[in-house]
Length: 163
Image: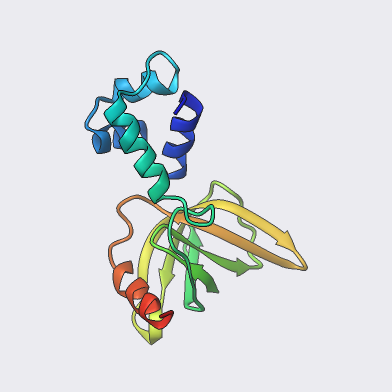
């Protein structure tokens, strides 16, 4: 695995160099040197990197996605008012929804997911892509690291429903 592949894996996981270093039990400067091509991972680190890559490939996505139609409310960071939407699919890493609101890739959002009429669960997320067509704006977001607590129950019920 070369420097570009290591960086691509790390960014796909939405991890910093520090986070990847912690997961692999190496220093930040070691990961930095790998990504700059100044050194190469040890055989043990390569095995772990390959396992991380394999664990995060699922039809080109990082996590198992489930079709969903949960009511959502979202707002851009710094805004006061929430907008309504419905999720199209969800995973432990993020979700997809449609809106007519102007949203751009790279923006930060606060998203409230309202499963089965329950109180909303709020998550901070980053817009990773926006697609427009047929008068519809589809938005894909990735939850920020550490923001997936509370999703386990939602995803568990979706997983059981799909079997």
